[in-house]
Length: 158
Image 1 (cartoon, rainbow, N blue to C red):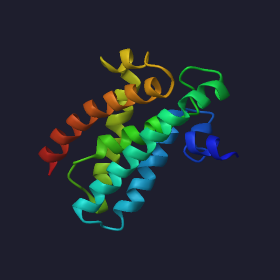
Image 2 (image 1 turned 45 degrees about the vertical axis):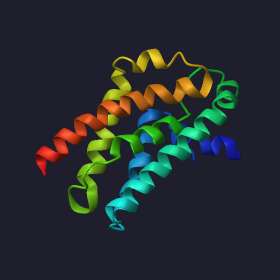
Image 3 (image 1 turned 90 degrees about the horizontal axis):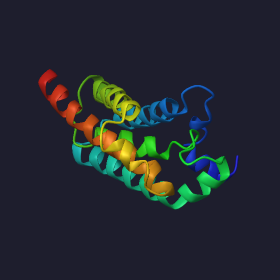
């Protein structure tokens, strides 16, 4: 697998024949849970999420035009860097709940997928932005909704 393909598919997770966006989101959640198992202090957890969000976003915008040309679609299903950014944004500033943050990671994954699939306004409209921007921004809008729901639910549960 070539480097650009590995990056935009989050190391192949987006190449899943079934629900590649869910596969990319799940791979991201698994990585985040692995990091949460290390029991990082809150500031380190936030730095990790911000780093993941920033890295995935920059790479998505930079590699978006190539991905559109390579896969031959405006928002190619195998491209899941937008899901990586979305899950990281969803988890940002959430309280770590459950054993080693498992509840937080599961809630962020589930809420992000719900809002990414349903695409409430303005998410669907943001898809019209060019290349990498359109691929990315609709997921970031979905992540904002997901984060707000998780903030309420996880603080209520906790």
